[in-house]
Image 1: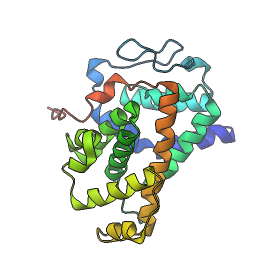
Image 2: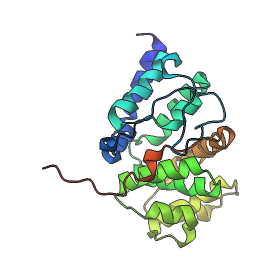
Image 3: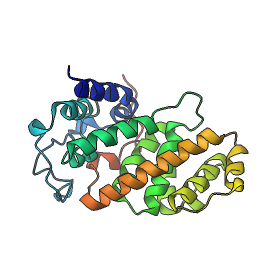
Length: 239
């Protein structure tokens, strides 16, 4: 295996928590699978991107493996992968940075659900439909809370947040708006049992998805239809 392919395969394995979450919440029985292709459309029939979307067979092998992993386990390929495959080198960089920021950090106190809630709040600030819909779904799956992401997307200041979540989002939104940070902003996190490294984690999520929001706007990226219902309907117990 060439080094580039080996590296992406490693990233695919380490981002399995997202694939697992999608699999947990996906409605595979309803056959929602969407295949990559130059004419890829959203549920409304509109293209998922204003830029050309490569056929899956023409995507470089390492990225095709990433997409196939999602298709096999979740039942669909997130449109962000299909859209950004227009620039394979940039998709590789995006996936690598995503893995570094979103995976659990040893000793960290910012959970996967915390990170997804930050993404929803930042994406709402930036009016990014794709990330609100996709990461609202991931928040529902990780947190088991079916309505909070919708509240945050509408107005995080009036959402039913606990004190810890509110402190995290207050800090995140200051960073998202490039406001000067004061000691008081950090102290608010410390009062909730968080530390300076956790503040870095919050800021890194904000930075990554400020980029992601803008790429979604540039490409007019459409959310997968599957994301809208993920985590809203409890899974039926196995018989």
